[in-house]
Length: 174
Ligand SMILES: [Zn+2]
Ligand SMILES: [Zn+2]
Image (cartoon, rainbow, N blue to C red; front, side, top):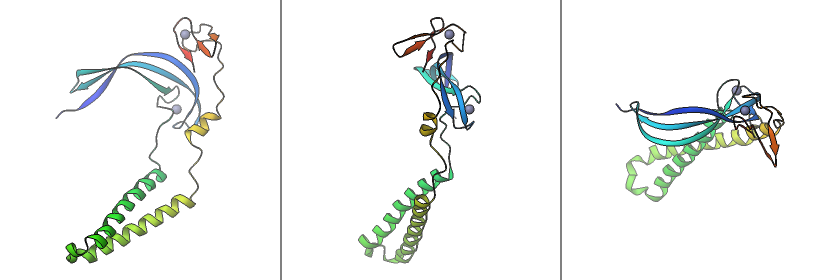
């Protein structure tokens, strides 16, 4: 069996900002970490992917913007699937009805079921209020970082022309 993954080598903190962590459900400090990623197959490095940056919550270590599989998201996916299915069954009945004469009853039945599911989920999604503010809205409400010292090495930051960085380790305030 072949399995693959990514080695994240030489991690380096290259930035920081105030963020809203969807996992902690609270405003958090986030660190931007740069790594040199290498794709491996069965632990054998095969393809260098280059430098990648990702945001990490200082508290829980996860991406602040973590996509959660919520009930709403599941409902949206099932809605799309049932619309496609309903269209398939009704389409089969009205356009190729004669060709599948023996199965018409089953197609009617499935067409009705899928339509009912689609209408029910559509109603649920329209009338049910969203679970809460989105990541973007929450992040807007978090005040920007205003540190004057580098949180990684303690060196006073240099702030010039919208670019605030640490002269020592190069970390950026973002
Ligand atoms: Zn967190
Ligand atoms: Zn620094």
